[in-house]
Length: 327
Figure 1: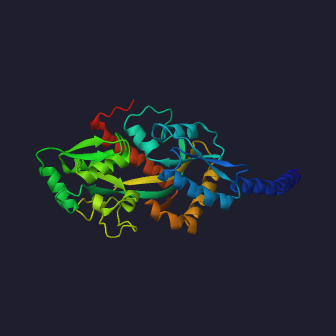
Figure 2: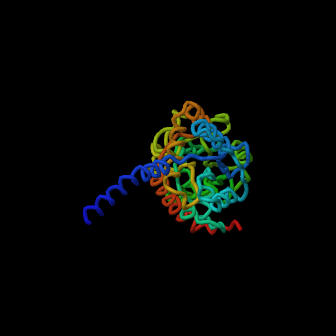
Figure 3: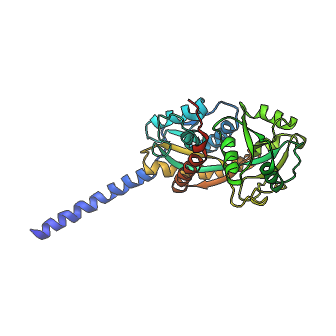
């Protein structure tokens, strides 16, 4: 009797093995069975929209299923992030994520219907765009060290511009101000164009701008002193890093990644990570990223999740003494 039971158990296990193996393969080989939404939380035509469409095109070609861009602009990206957080965790809704709607939004006290760390599953850190420290042509400085000395010695606050209260260009400058003891005063603008005009005219003395903007504007309009990346940025090889300019360890990036709703199963996360990593290596993406002021990253879920937490800690610390009110 025991031998018969053992034989039956062995036979049952043998018959079940192919079924279990097939199930495991099916789980590991998840593929979208209908079009996928990539929510871009910004209006059409901007740099993030262009970036999202670039990756959607590359990934669609690879998976054989359309990836449809849905622009859900509003509240600095919060509307799109909120829609993603509420979506089913089935792999068919993804978010083109940036610090604006995740870490910075919470750091500056925005009322959010989602938790930027716990309500999303990070998939891949796609790219980084450093910012550049630029000054008015008339400001009597020629490098980062001279600018720091000038702003520390100024009797009256030197006005600096940003693309708005609580934006990355605002917080990065406030981080530098606190670190170096700069005597500067914040002048917020509704976007970059008006700020660039006032910088060129000398009505403000300095500001952080995207590297994409550096590539687009004339050198006569501003002096670019340094970039915030660890190493020199390939499209602007003659511009030193801020670290080279004397700001040891000072880095900042406008990063972009892909996230899904929390509770999205691991095989789905891994499939999308692999597909977007593959897209980063295509000629289509590699040829376009530099013109968008970006460099490829490719870090996976664990590293991207760590970036979210570290970013949130950094910008919360910077924003805390500023008493920012955006509601």
